[in-house]
Length: 447
Ligand SMILES: [Zn+2]
Image 1 (cartoon, helix red, strand yellow):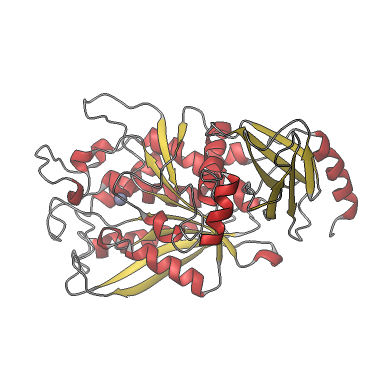
Image 2 (image 1 turned 120 degrees about the vertical axis):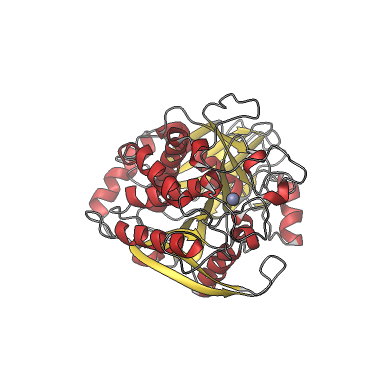
């Protein structure tokens, strides 16, 4: 225990406070997001004409090479912001030949790292990605126009802006902000990143893929308003047979770590962003499709797709568009900067809170089955910043958590009068500033 006197004080306070006390600075940080900077990024990336992975690597004005060099410069510029703690990196790699890359390709991921400050959690990280390549009318046409303004200059703009706003912060765990290459050729950049971080022993405690976060135009030409979607796995992609049997006993098919991350981001959006309705979709992804988050969830990490409400099918990647005669180019005309700014504010708030939060509870179990008193237990990591526990509860027909209760630091709790059959539970840790870990639902059961 590093700060015994202060610790004792906040422990007492936390026991009395509701779980959702204001986290200082989060709203202010979210408010720093500038729609004009998002527009500038989208306009500039679209101006390279195409960012097809096989487009011109050498031209200064057109193609993936010029776009990548400009983007690398933007990440470098973030390291020079006042007080910035960001470290820029690029990660060139060779993509092997495949159906959409007949001769293979030299690709590069670009980004910045915000180093964590907790010496006991140096191997834990959050990851925010957006692919920066684009596709035009024909997926094999590397020369034709493919401005990719919404798909996915908008996601790259979100990543750059989130990194800019959080540049001088001092999170407990590291945060990687990455523009990934080769998204259209099989999520190659994300696969490279996930593999590399795993090889380096990095435990990703949460990742989000921002992909198409700027369109508000519906098919009939009206505006869709302020809603966006968070897609996530309800059941972990790497679940073992044994885990499945326990999960079926617990009825927690809607409570995997990815789904909790989606709920966490929604709460950040609801709390800190005006005019944004974050929809927690009870689906892994859009029908028949997947995204960069699935690369990470298959490696066992919690991952979420962050995306607009309306997929503009007439402007999207061509493999989804067979026979769509109304196709138009994905130009900045269709980018709604104010809308993207609201989604970016949600991401700033969510990343800021989760990156500062203490370590999550482990070995969460549920008992009291067949009685009217649910019992939860868990073990806490040796994280001296944990000052309290937040118990989450909802009825089993609910999507969102309906009740939260802050209690003193402990490793078990009986909830009198609440049976286990109708309600779902989870447990989070909280620090003195109110930053909460991801809630963890029970993974074991006792009768
Ligand atoms: Zn995309």
